Length: 496
Image (cartoon, rainbow, N blue to C red; front, side, top):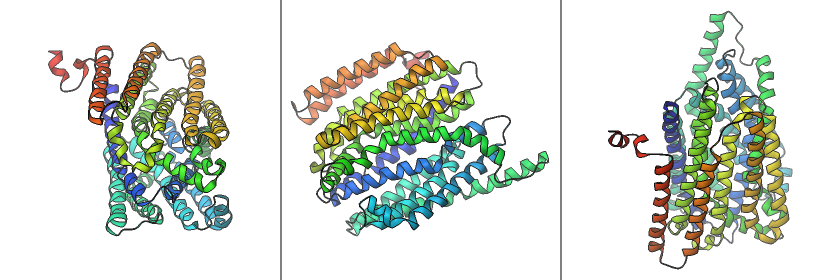
């Protein structure tokens, strides 16, 4: 129970930076969609390029975040050398990437249909390179259990980015998407400077470690590098397939849609509506930041499988609750985007369902990481990616962005099921399938009730009615799995 409370506390802190930060970032969605008209396709360009950025970031980090946790927690490895070696890999990849982009900008812009906007590509290349450089220092903060600085830097970026966007788009009246990319670059570069203390500390600690043991100091230990790359390359494949599951629809949409210009417009609508569904991505990310270091640290404990099963159940309970809240209060949430974008709101529950499957898959994925068989994750994610791409390529020309939403369900659902069934043979964990399925059934039933009532009453009465259903869900959670006596603070009264 102590470990579960630690997980909850760290998730809350990481979640503060992730969820609150993303919520504040939502302020940019109505800002961008109000200053950039649907017809211009400008928001479609933003959606398209950020999808490429997400993929490139996975390639540049090369699975080193998870690899760093795995090797830093090994008793026979030098954690300081693990840090420096991880950084060396990412720095080398980043340098090569920047050289390719800056030297090959003409053919790259031609392929992406951005011959008139080469500067967008160059700026985003610099942004993703800086993000990659920051990846290991952010992981280092998690490894050292320093969630406060982690959250503070994440929030600083968000606040600074929002402030500059308000200055340029509201106060100065700018309307060019150029400033979206330029301001992102300025803020990302600024945050990088705050990691200088971590770099300096690790350098000094590594020298002291080597001197104490009478061994040669090396920034890169090539023997260690070979072991780390052997572990990380399947994670890279896993990460590429995983991020493609999240972004490939936004990358290929303008390419397979019958009319490229109209495809950019439709992608802008889809990209704006998907922002509402990203509450699931926030929750999963916050959970991952807290859960990943604990999983590897917990791997030596005798009760680890029971802990993993319990964490999975609480994850499912909480994400289903979030699903009901988003659907139930849609008349309020939809106001973050202008009316001309709201034609795509029917994708929101579908995208959220896909994100829940992705979160479950993430929880299931630890069995092959703990037994150092990460190649399994690569195969699962590739299978899911293949399913997603097939749905998108086949159905986008006819069903537009609805194919993107259902493609996510197909992709994550495939990876989730494969990981579960193979995992139960390779590393069996006694998940409470019956209990979790009960919550899924109740959530689906409540969703269909909400959907049936939609449009048949005014917004206030509709949301009040949905609140009753959401409270009923919480009552069920308290009765079945989270009695009030187990909760902090208020639980003391019930334990007396």
